[in-house]
Length: 347
Ligand SMILES: [Zn+2]
Image 1 (cartoon, protein in one colour):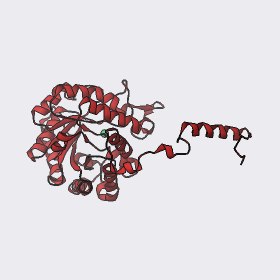
Image 2 (cartoon, helix red, strand yellow):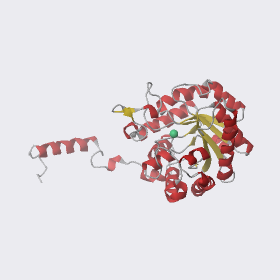
Image 3 (cartoon, protein in one colour):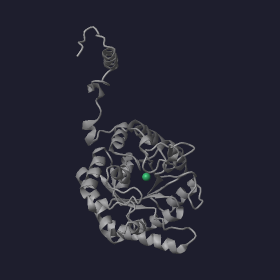
Image 4 (spheres, protein in one colour):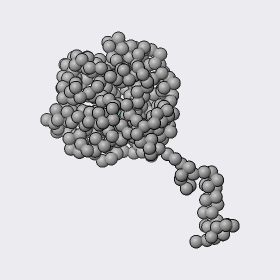
């Protein structure tokens, strides 16, 4: 289904569920686990709806870090089946209502060690477990995301393939344009494509400006569908990924990223740039909310359910027109000076 959609047009992804839910108060910063799907399902359902109404063609099941390793950290490994099941069921309900797709989710396990084959088996076991509980019928395809080792990405790909499902594998790059197991970016993606990945791409860590140069190289390196899902937090050449940002000399990640947030117009510009580069799956990651996704959809020429509420600034009393702004500024200044402008009355 996802491949059919990609054949026809660019597919618009959603934003970062976990960071948006943390901002709303339902995910704990630190572990970043998604137990909210069983504790406050209505909150997750609403955010899926928000992304759907903003124009997302795909919603990602809120199962990031719903693997055994992370759930152990919060003492909830026993709830692994329930959390994974709930994540895909919630996404499915909303997706069916809006005629869009559900992506199951696998992510970096923190278990994988390239030099230790036992961890490869364990990584595979945890991925298999997640796929079993997220289900094959509930999802339209699987995204394995934020993976920094080619080896771990290939284990995720195999797990998805062995379940007979469509795969999108996205790698994350912080400082280097190599995977953590030392493979040049282009070679890693070629390997994934040759191994049968349906869509490959880059996600998380970098903002659009830091990600697009890598995306252009990826586009050149492989045939077939390519995805980008950047964060909506400004980075820089010196600090190309968002966790490296500083505020007043301290790390801004994770609690003081607010001033780094990209505006909706910046994310809209990214969507257009990605389309021009030939990226077919254009989404976003940490920090991106429904406002960003709607602006991206509209930049791509789409009218979406919540375009009903898109800006009409001409109706705003201050920003409505330049003339209006000038007049108002003059009036406020005059009032402050205790003067009276012709045609205005002092209150
Ligand atoms: Zn992210």
